[in-house]
Image 1 (spheres, rainbow, N blue to C red):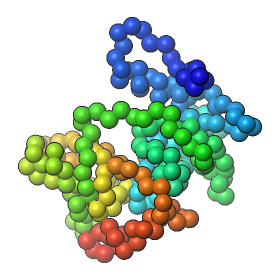
Image 2: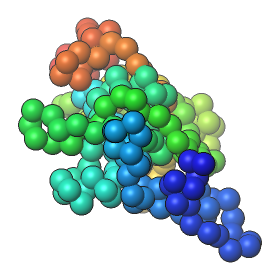
Image 3: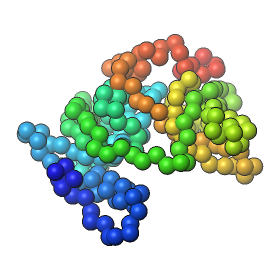
Length: 212
């Protein structure tokens, strides 16, 4: 079975579901790659995705031992698989023209990440380069804090205005909500160009100063 090939760790009685899931994901990402039809199949966790850049990265210990870094993955490859940040995926690997490890199809979801109650869903409402911040609109967080969630320039690098996102919150010294982590609610399968840019979003989602 796939579970056996991924060498899932044995858990003692009484361990919670979350502990099992995190241990399983960590073990799978560090498991020895399989060989299927002459192709080496790797397993790793989707670590990051930028909708503005159209690319992300997969964390895989086996690949890191060889190249010393995470695996580059194009937005179209992630989108076709239905994978998202935090999911455990299996994939084939090739070396791109820059000599870097890149995931290729078929990429499949092995295990969907569990989203805790702290994960919220909203829309990137605004961002202004001149002020260096923007806001995420979320009904649930607004009911709690009475305001939109502050989005810093650093966190805004991976998203665009109007994008539906998943995010977590931290509070500043005044108790105001800030975006702690943010990722797409869904990674789309189509519309990316060769450089990873979202073609169908051309002319949309620009920042207030008119720059994308």
